[in-house]
Image 1 (cartoon, one colour):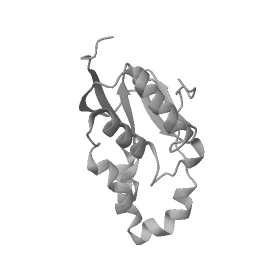
Image 2 (cartoon, one colour; image 1 turned 90 degrees about the vertical axis):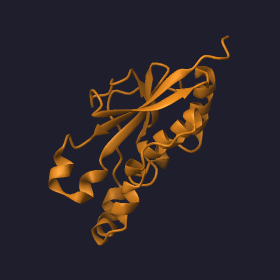
Image 3 (cartoon, rainbow, N blue to C red; image 1 turned 90 degrees about the horizontal axis):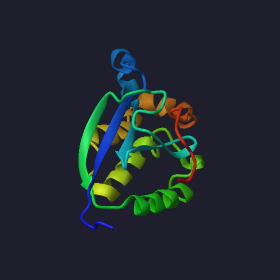
Length: 158
């Protein structure tokens, strides 16, 4: 085993509204779905738990943006053990919350585990900005009931 191997880590960013959110309302700007791409797979969290697929392999198609997060020396075996432990604890399917515990919080946590870097703050800060408005508070019960799971992922443990 090569102890000096490094693996590229990318953040895939998808606009779930396909551009409509930016035209319609500031409340809709938080519609980015993110995923971490490493070891030739795309990993994400949604209403069915942690999933993976080939990069760009969900029905969302190709990402709207890709951010290079750097490289990791964490092996795939160690990462898969970490991913499984997250799926059994912090990121179980029933723990998904659209604004507070979602694909973006998962991507942020995994990025920090792999690279020590966070994902861009414009993604992680937006939910609190939206929920701090009177309109956001009015919509909160509805927003809390929504789960997003991009179709096409593999929800098996490995």
